[in-house]
Image (cartoon, rainbow, N blue to C red):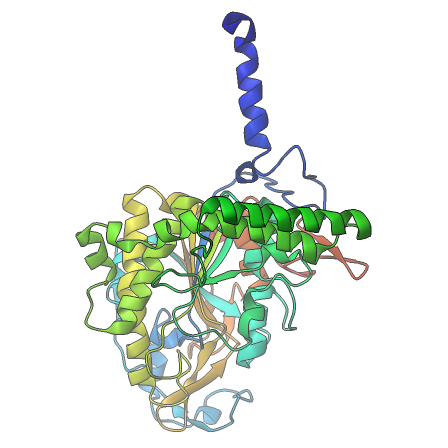
Length: 464
């Protein structure tokens, strides 16, 4: 019997894998436009994304884009030197030189300010894009634009698009997780929503401590009793579907119930940082005297553990440092130093840890705020919003390391070389994950919608 059936065992195993959510349900889902799990369309470079969201807008001229001209004209009236665009608060002061010194690091020689001594050690892993622009100078609209490709509320987040296009590799955790360090960005949870996509693709918000998710432990006296309740709910839901047809809200609720049941074992395991060796915890900053560093260290470490479990898209929000995020309209030096102190060590540890585990090549790490800051002061010691040219960086996942792409003018004010839009960033992220942004669509309101709207070009110069 074994000899006669041997050739069939492989087919049985393949059928089981193909029917599993971890492998995309390729026998059930379509591969045409507008169908879930329609990717990948080409070679996959990155299987997972860790999005390090720098809430508020870090200053490009104080982090990754040095401008000696600011030192030369420090304290001068900017309107006498260049055309000054309207700003958020129109309380424009004089040209403001960076309070921090820049130094070249690594074999690539990429300059990094003294705000990021630890990230500077990893500079040869980075592709720094200095010419990013946004269409919005105000936080809420700019946040929607960065997260969803639209300044309007209610569009699907990029994490939702990634999971819609590729499906989830993990059966016991959500495919899109937001690790909330304490600051939900302006725009609220709609920054992580599924919009018109099925609700099962929306981001699940975890805290980086304790159980991570509320009510993760069952309240029933036994697992059999809980399973019986879920089976009853499922039967009732199926009766409604048979009576009234398929509805996204109901079907998503069914999926969420089943996922929540599976998460009871997976979430405590992934949140148990005590399993990590002491030297790894110390490397991330879990023992730091500064509490925001400890919070962000936990977020970065959990993100790495989630990548190991197959979570597709993980976003990290900033911890509360007692100021206004990276949004320093005043007290630039104090505010930026507090924010950098919170994230610098954990981010560097994340990059090093992913590299030493052989995971960085398939994990795309993206660092970005919603816009940058002005080269002149707001008042005396702050900087206003600047969407005309700012810096972001990418690492791992097929990104060309040790690269600088694009440039701003001599003041660090406006992008003048290889201008890159948020749509281009999204297109590049999807491309690295094997998805053609122009083919990843969803029919809504009589139109084939996509993350990049009708724009977006892949930034091939930052790709290996």
